[in-house]
Image (tube, rainbow, N blue to C red; front, side, top):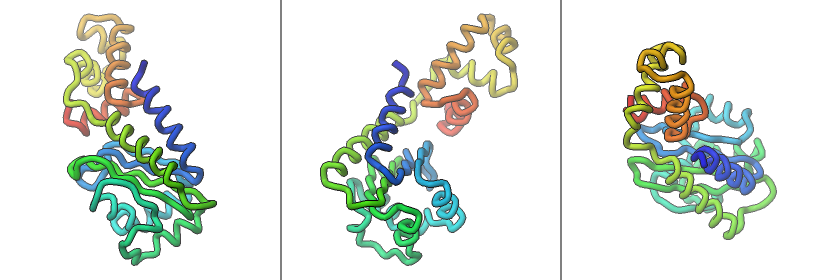
Length: 203
């Protein structure tokens, strides 16, 4: 079974637990996540990005300060810019944050709903899903020679037929290697796989 299928199921379950959406920044390094998934409203994401809230968000600060889970309402950090109040105006009234992993590769997941606080049982499920997402998306330490060779050829601008001919295999065999590389990198497209391989210093 493809790792992407397992990832899709985890994200689906996280979505069911987060009626007003979620944002999962996975394996944050040098202030940016290697992988990010989000289902918050695009209007809120746009506003959040335009205002540069990530560097001022108490939820993010909490996530870097400790591992575990907390309701937004229980975060005892100053919200100087009123981010939680502003989020509520976009339907993100109640929330929970989960932080997982070493500080050098921390994953921070925020989940929201509009109607009520998250229950303890819901927070436990979200924490479990967050931990599993963190583990599943842990970047591979290497690619096989066949995988990296196939990705490099496409990255260099070769079309499938030309790339296959260059290394003496069939086009279908090349596509199989690319699919294998996509699965290993949890990428949906070859272009995404190439970018992630570069981000992980594997190409």
